[in-house]
Image 1 (spheres, rainbow, N blue to C red):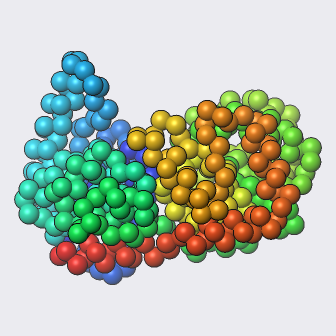
Image 2 (image 1 turned 60 degrees about the vertical axis):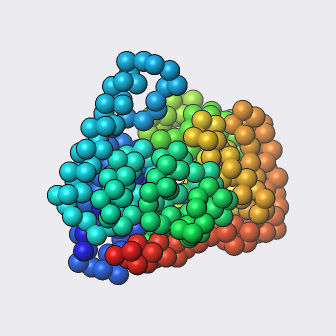
Image 3 (image 1 turned 45 degrees about the vertical axis):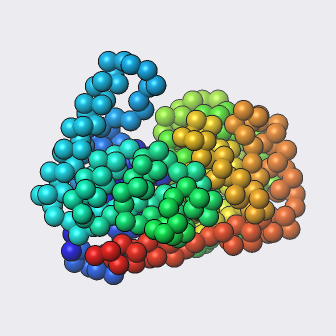
Length: 363
């Protein structure tokens, strides 16, 4: 059995794809996979390291709403990519093709659909992306990560499954995180991350928060800045010597960090929220304001309405406001406990297996 998987640009599209591959492999160990992504996206580095065959399409998104030479070039690349995608499907002869989001999915899923190869797209966000909205007219099945997304797609072929979650996230124990990061179990632990690339606005607000918390020493903080922001943050935190605060550029062991966290300060990307809810971690969410269709704010609102999170809009984010929310939550263990329970109720830990079953049912 052969399956093409496509998804690219950010970790939010790539990691669900890799999780689905693992879920299918657990059911069909002999399955052969080909990953189709972009040259410049994170997938060109992450996927080969995972031991999966990778092919890159030369394709760029972000068409401007006016006539420009750049748009002409991008349109030409898009047309070439559809032809190239058709050649890939012909050569690999897949039994199914799966897309997890990002504009790179467009050519390969469209080509497969036109060639009558069974297809599925997985939409992580509460508001569907443009590529998936277009593809929904052609593909056989659609799996959505949130109930709110159901209204974006044809009901006859759409299933609410939740978003795929890495097994490592579910398997990690609190003790693993405490040992990994040298934290203690007697004080609450706050995990801060702005996503796979970091978030400058969150980092800026956290500078004063961390300086304040270093003096209190009443909670422990693991702040993930993003590689591009790390040097700047460290420079502004110069001479901050506090055993309760750790600042790192990137985490390859995020599952262990989530397992020990009592509270998270996060963006509102779908994959991160799926992992937080699977673990039952309450959160202060700061949606990325420039996400397509403002989908991160809609993602966050679903958790806020369920009582699992608080939300601060990026335009309102300041160190004092973040500190106020942090102080209120850390001062009320019962509130955190209630939020954790609400978060866990939203989790879909079996999403990857459910989606894998849908894919296999098409073959």
